[in-house]
Image (cartoon, rainbow, N blue to C red):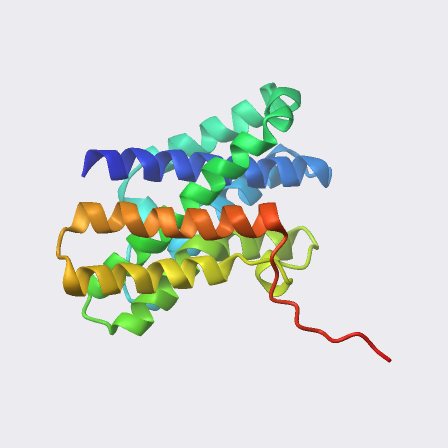
Length: 203
């Protein structure tokens, strides 16, 4: 599916830009920014591939991912003020990206014969662990460890894909619907300020 591949590259670029901007904000040099951009973009997929025994990992088989990350570095340095103004647009692409990476990671895990529940876990790893690595390297508490709904959206989207595949075996439609579910949950969670923080107030 060419459109899936195109979205995958776009998602990789958006994640890379996110990482590079974080590195610049933390006063990393250009090499540090490239490394942070790269781990943000492909760190989750790399970890997934290692865990399921698929090596060489995905980006090593396709140089386009490296070119996209390099382009993200150049764009981030050249147009940082303009990109920062479009953070809402970046958020939209980022949210589309986590939905896509969740389902692609899930499908790849199923393809090597692992169980559906492990596939959902690996799909979530694909989507969120690049951000986890970025946050750890830049000294920030990772988003999935905070109250904000992030990984939960990926898990729900993953199980939705499995359910759809069981009753409606039309892969392209199921991929799109599952991505929309992840997007909708994540978008509404941010807009409505939903959280999983059930801490009770002290008396």
